[in-house]
Image 1 (cartoon, rainbow, N blue to C red):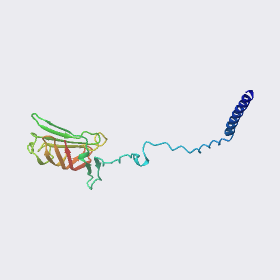
Image 2: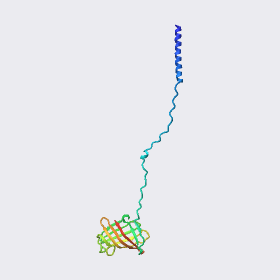
Image 3: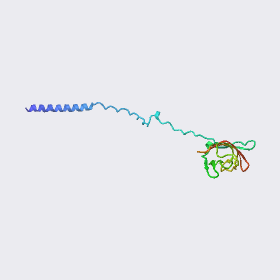
Image 4: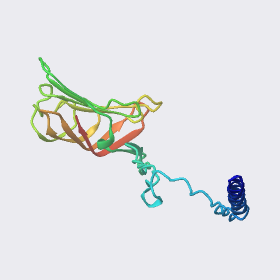
Length: 201
């Protein structure tokens, strides 16, 4: 009986040794770990919008240069200087009617670089009493007086009343007057002419 126990113990020791050797052998012959995949470059950062949807660059609006509202032409053979006025580019005009014993329509420019003024008296001068049409610019007979200072507050002398014709197109609801052809003699003797100048109050 003792021999059987010794034999069983010896067999158990052999089984344990065999298992330990097998574990150790399999650990020693395990396959090596695979190499990690090569590193790749990081993708470029995303933009807010694809290139084809980017907003186009802004451009400045083109500037428009208007001709001056007032210009001087070359003196004529008689020395008269034409004053060229674009009424559409004048600053807003003073336009008022004063009632009373001597009713007066008064229209004139309100800017520093030129002064053109028209006084229209409906009672003074029997030739004009407030009607529309074309009339002489004559203070005495028609009560229509035109004045000019070619550079407003500048050094050139002004003058008037001028001689010529004026067309009165409208008086009520804003005056519309056209200086058809008016000659002004300034206080220093210089002669100026105005043609086709429309003043709209």
